[in-house]
Length: 407
Image 1 (cartoon, helix red, strand yellow):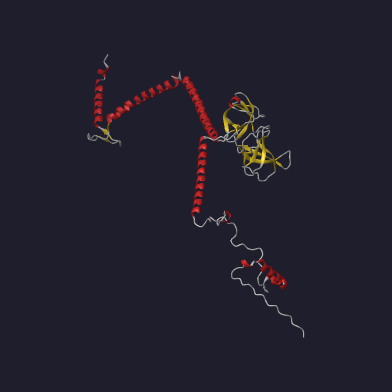
Image 2 (cartoon, helix red, strand yellow; image 1 turned 90 degrees about the horizontal axis):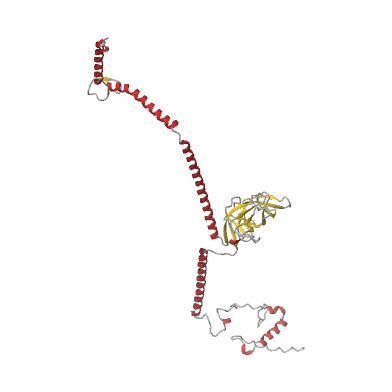
């Protein structure tokens, strides 16, 4: 049997020559970017044709192999190798929940720090002695507005002590235990406090209604009460000190039980539904902080200096008065000194003196000649001859005219 190469020897040789010729041609021919063929070996801007052929021949298998590898890896990682993904998801979920709890705890600690800082600042500035306490429980009933604090009789708390916050009043201590106390809130129906409206100065009684809202009762109808007016404690109930904020007037409604009376509904100044820390007023005797005592000492020092300056000025004025000539007469009593003489310089007599020589224009002439003559004689007799004024002429007596005889 003849061999394949022997049988097709001529054809194979021809094909080999053609292949060699084609390869040589492909090596010599350059293809530019625009698709033009060139045989110039100096043209280096294009790509050899054999390289293009080789690229076109090799690229499809390479793309096929690369796609197969990527698909296999993706299938393995995303679908086959998922044995521990579920556990990892559970661990990550637990970590997220723990971080959320820690974030909420840190946020609550930050808010509590802000509240305690404000509470401490108010406690330092407040004039009365207070004890800070934390709210540890509530009544659990909508009918009774009470809560419990973590301070009691061992901390100096007693019944009917005022419970406040920096925003306003809260209530009063109703029951005291060794380590805790029960506080009755001001919005309870059995609570009460004396209040006064800041602008109109109208007094009333504060208490809570059935819905747990604050209202002032026992006020006659008055058009001056407007929404937005501030309400303060009056201090007459012997529980709450005077001047603490109570709330703000929200609206005015007529009293359903009494005519010509109104109920004033208030918005409380303190957040009664969100109480965490409160202050209990344990003493109403004023006490001052170190800064306030320092300011008071400085004020007293300035007042003393002012008094000393006034005394020195008064002393200097007295010295100047002593040194001035002619201001004090040594031979006169004190009440007749020029500086102390209180008599007017030219006293006006109550009645003018009688004239020595009355005429028609004198006041005494109106009463007649019979009245003027005795007045003139009385004036001459009243003046002693030794005390006559200098320069005054003594009137000469007129000679008596003898009566005429009848013929």
